[in-house]
Amino acid sequence: MCRDRFGVKIDVNVTARRLVTTHGRVTALATDQGDYRADNYVVALGIQSAALARTAGMALPVYPAKGYSLTVTSQIPMRHPPSVVSTRRRWWPGRGSAIPCGCRRQRSFAGYDRGFGRGDFDNIFAVARELFPEQADWDSARMRSCMRPMTPDGPPIIGGAKKHANLYFTPGMATWGGPCRCGSSKAMADIIEGRAPAIDTSAFTVRRWRK
Ligand SMILES: Cc1cc2nc3c(=O)[nH]c(=O)nc-3n(C[C@H](O)[C@H](O)[C@H](O)COP(=O)(O)OP(=O)(O)OC[C@H]3O[C@@H](n4cnc5c(N)ncnc54)[C@H](O)[C@@H]3O)c2cc1C
Image 1: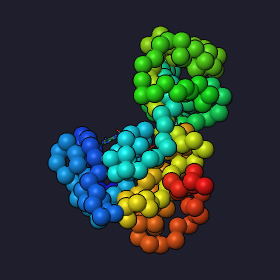
Image 2: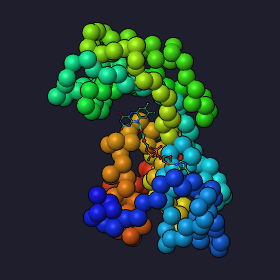
Image 3: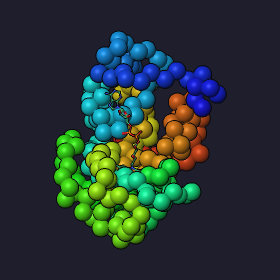
Image 4: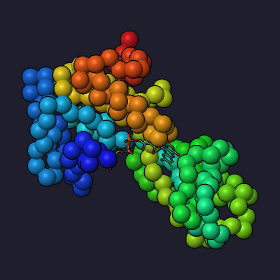
């Protein structure tokens, strides 16, 4: 939609290395594919946002909170595949015959280590098997771990950097990436364009931790 409707150019498989700054402005984003230049720069790298911000001398309090999820294939054709969350709350819809299973409570702070063991999924397996005892092939479940970008107080960071006039941030959506991402993007676009956002973003600035 972004490409077709708005002419957005999307480059994938490009790794951002550092922000180049001079006289209170970002002048380039250095990547493994060369430098990118723009009028404005938005840092939205999930758990890697803090590392990139650091290259511009900014401290972003965004930390990785590890989470676990698994996907199983249903043995029964489903028109509306369910999803399973260990708190028994519907969380995201399945696709095709895949039943995604996740856990809201099972998370940990383990640095950037993505390793996992079967025991990390006990809670998810227990609830999912109870709900769908015969429906899925539980032995072939695909397990994975990933990182939620979290801030110390919960809400994401949305706003500009005082230190650099054309640098902005939207990381830290933690568990709420789905419901947050459209609103935060809209608010960010309004801020960059100099319009008043529809929501009060003063509670989301990176300066909120400063007394
Ligand atoms: C197990 C689990 C289950 C979840 N379930 C839900 C759910 O059901 N509903 C919900 O709303 N949220 C859920 N979340 C949270 C959701 O995934 C996050 O809130 C959301 O992904 C955050 O979006 P983001 O764009 O800020 O970061 P990300 O989605 O992490 O995107 C950051 C992107 O930046 C890229 N990147 C990082 N470093 C670099 C670099 N140096 N150069 C270039 N690119 C880089 C990454 O590859 C990535 O594509 C879940 C999270 C986990 C871990």
